[in-house]
Length: 262
Image (cartoon, rainbow, N blue to C red; front, side, top):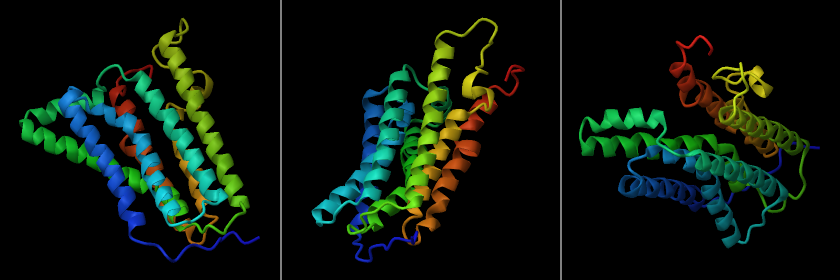
């Protein structure tokens, strides 16, 4: 069996600008709502984060349908997996969102020192726009599947099954880690201290981020079923680097670096 399914060559520009317009349009609308009605709580962008993967790719699928292109099993599989993750994470963060996240609060207070114009420029630049660019890079493997897959390629390949299995493992790790952390915070067992060290947390201080990165490696493996899909490896490499060194682990490491329990 060949693991390089043929890709489309009749790609119109709308497949690229339409999902990008959807993504930034939603992010900027959220930013406007936050500034007008959300008490400048920019941490609402975390609720939008996972949705920013789902909606633009739905836009791609709508364009495919308008052009009478079928959605093969690979598209359905990859989109279904990402949609499940998007809805689960977005709802989870939404339920937990009771106040402004300390990271965004620190940024907001620092930006507001320069006045409203400086604050709005940095809020829209560093929060709503930059996260949009991060989302595009992160989701390139999924975009590749949805845009370049042909409608005639009906069969799944070994790489599709492997990728789905890797995704499921990552997804389970993330939801188990989140559930265990929520239970610990709600009712910590006597003698356990501030930080959870049981369950999957005994193996890592950040198992939820590990699970999230693993899911995107799974999506990339699925994209490898397509010809040249392997080149989108930068997308899963980016999310792995991002949660480890940029937007995930570093915040906790910095916040608790002087805490001996950590």
